[in-house]
Length: 410
Image: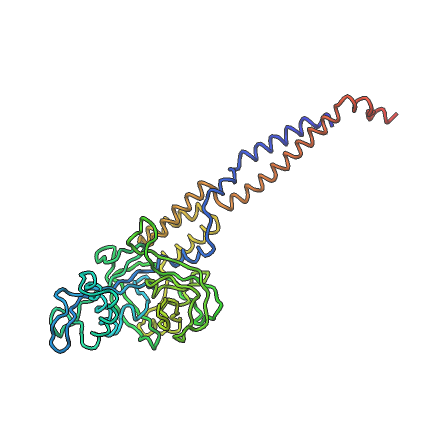
């Protein structure tokens, strides 16, 4: 043992030190933000969610006399969410958001006028509802001239949205076709843009109560940087039994701007659109527009749900990212950003992939490094054992009580 102890200790020590030096400290992985449970689905869908804002401009007039109720035109908006279904810029949303009936438009205009009169102290806020109800049957909304139609514009925005914006990055939009509320309440809008990120529709046309899903749509910005703007919100939900409207619903809602937003599965496939539950006074956006109606509308309009090359590349980059291949993901996200500049999330994830790689390396590499750490630990244990054995072998007590091998042979 005395002869072997030196070389063995030297060899094991060199191997242990070599292994430890070759591997980065895995503790750095603790500095990297953790993924949320539904982040892969959210990341796949978010770039295809759009904010829609329809603006009406007109004059409220007495039907009989034609006299205007106010000298200034009434300007109001209808706001909601939508989902892009092909790279050409076709968006699906709620019909009542972008193509409401004349009665709904009139009521919206009367409420806007009423709030203006409250601000001018010509109306008490407590009388607002009765003010609108008293004028609904005798008033009409027209353009600048009696008999003309009010002005209507529709714009869409991706990513963080600024209300009232009508110049870039806002995109002009047009309603292509809409199914009435009783036939599905889903509308198809065409944006004046192309090469847009698309959502992937679920192949199954039916969902059932109890299914887990993610709701995605716009809401008011909650940070200092997004105050006064609208951002995409998400929430984990489950499909519920039918609501008072007779449609399936979800267990929670995102707020008034989420109407027309997406409900997706864990893979990011669209299961339904969000719609308003009109059976309750609060009218929460927790009803679902089913795939059956969405597919019917797309077929009538001759539009096919499809992903672009950039969409597929983006999903491949996401797969690499969530598999821990951060170096490859960063490169692939950069490629997506060049192919589809409107996909701002590709740049965000590209930056995150680089940060994660610097802090922790690729997960695959880290797994290999852990093997090195284990082997190093084993080598260290062998070193300690070897040193202990060497000490015991060469101690004075051992040398006086233990005979040499040659002595045993005698």
